[in-house]
Length: 287
Ligand code: PLP
Image 1 (cartoon, rainbow, N blue to C red):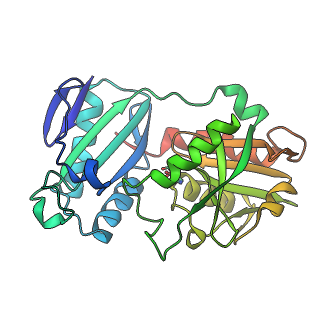
Image 2 (spheres, rainbow, N blue to C red; image 1 turned 120 degrees about the vertical axis):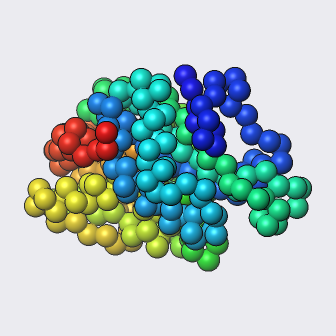
Image 3 (cartoon, helix red, strand yellow; image 1 turned 90 degrees about the horizontal axis):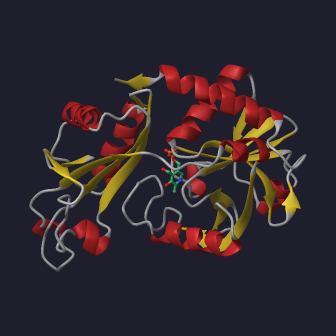
């Protein structure tokens, strides 16, 4: 395995960052998680758009042009001979001094890691996950805008810790107003009376690439989709609930906080959307 580190390819053992790196010291940086299907980078343009938008928002100069970044991703995949896997693209503010001033960091660091992916077993896609809501709240735009995919993931990690304590794979996070926001690293959808609902991003959700793909699929397949805020009550009484994310794809939820969702397994619309999503991954990508 080789890792892209600022234009060079180094072994895993030699892929190291400075203790003065502001990504490490302050979480000052951004990242993307991207899938490789059959050697193709799925939704490459969308991921790079989100990366460059996040960078612009936090005034981080990415030292590679969009085209150079795409070429770096392709080369990293090729050098690792990866057909199906996961790309972690990280841009940190780079090494500086102990002060938090980004002016002290002369150049950003770009890191690309490709790896095999440990995803949910296929059984989970049919039977659905058990999930819980947690007390940790999603910060909404008065703090860091959730559209920025920054290296500040402590909030999400606290959700993951609560999920672990409850013995579940993914948990549901509300925002400070009590609206359902998202999971620790997945967006959420519910279905009621054949209408598909997902929270708008202003409620406190990342603008997920998989979320966008599912919204497009709903349109294509003729399902009514409503992007409106909803509460835990709506989740409990939904016919179907599912999470979406680059790693998880489209995964059904069969139980939330002890309430059985619908029939207690992946529902028909969720299953249909997963099937159509998996068709999409074969045709939509950069080689
Ligand atoms: N929400 C959060 C907080 C995430 O970290 C992720 C993963 O990237 C998602 C949602 C799902 O987004 P995507 O479909 O782009 O992977």
